[in-house]
Length: 369
Image (cartoon, rainbow, N blue to C red; front, side, top):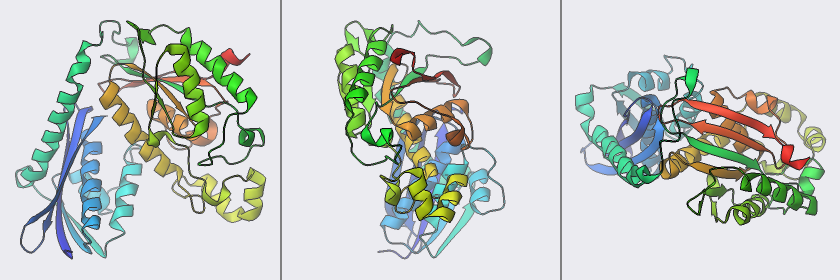
């Protein structure tokens, strides 16, 4: 274990926004010995998002090494000043990243942030570029996908071939009938829920572009049984297979799991009131909406890195789908409380390589009538 470490972190984006990656290196503060390296491709993102990714990875590595004091050195003036508390975090996309980094920093007895010139941050910068190069190489085979079918989107200014997400909420369960908090509880669809899933599957089965040259679009679902059943109905209609992604799982409602809203309010009136007004607060023993947003954003970036430029069917839950729509709209967390999503509903959002996005459809249930 090393008590005092240096964390050097960096991130970059080729296009800003564009293909992005980060790098971080942890060194013994006394000897300069490299103790850990971290790098990752993060998909389409801005420089600032990638730089925060490097910081978060570096702090996490320092924590794994058992460090108690950390000196962070970065060439990002923005991240250094925001983490030092001298600059406000105004952009909605930066706020959850800043919160995540501060949550990690709180594990140490002291963290100090220092701006350094780029030339002095070459190790982390090199790791970030390696990550971007690896991401570019991984995506290279996808260039065989037909890309001449999508043109720039008129007045929005978006260019390139978007990654289109068809967002399907799972069908009815016994918990949804009784309007109970249903997060990680693994409950199956009711018979009516299976009918809803079949109707959604029929709707998608009739849509153009989901089966190209005999190959079905990727179908990615939360690992819970209600989403797996819904996704399988869609896979059967398209002739595809279901892929599972843990990042698409519903919010962990902790001690409120299985309770109605009234039961939870009667049990924790002040806490639930605070929870409803502050997305950084987690349910007792559970997960905050900010935490959900961070992991869903990571899941989205991973899907774009893997299936960029294609149409993907995403079968998930209320909160993750709202998070994806919020990203498409570049909206704040209040969207979570102002947007309604029905069971087995269909929403559509597109994410473009240049960082633009377009929400095409929200909460369509015409296939259920």
